[in-house]
Length: 168
Image: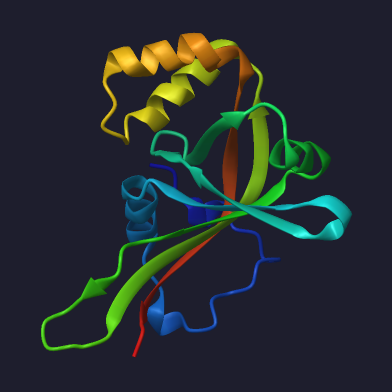
């Protein structure tokens, strides 16, 4: 697994509440186990545009992978400016003897890269689908039916922070 800390740029802010910080391993675990997050891009007229989206974290290359339609606001924004952020948060967790919830979150900054290769697009679609209870037959049917109109992209992570918040 690549050490993301080797790629962090000094232009990213440090986390203000360092005592709440998650380790890199805890951040990656959250990215691997949760099925969706919010992708934010620089949208039309300089407004941020955030959209819920499914993802897959690849341990081999340390990238996040996504798939969706090959046209739309998200695609136009990425083509215009590849800088993005992606936020994932875990399920609320209650601990014995405590009334307030705990929640983990991860925020990633990086640059989106569109995947042009159709075979890799199908591969990424299969990876993302593996996080859901779909059968192989269903996944292959969807890829054969919608593969030509599917766009996949990845994020090379440049900064990743995570924290555990106690909502008391």
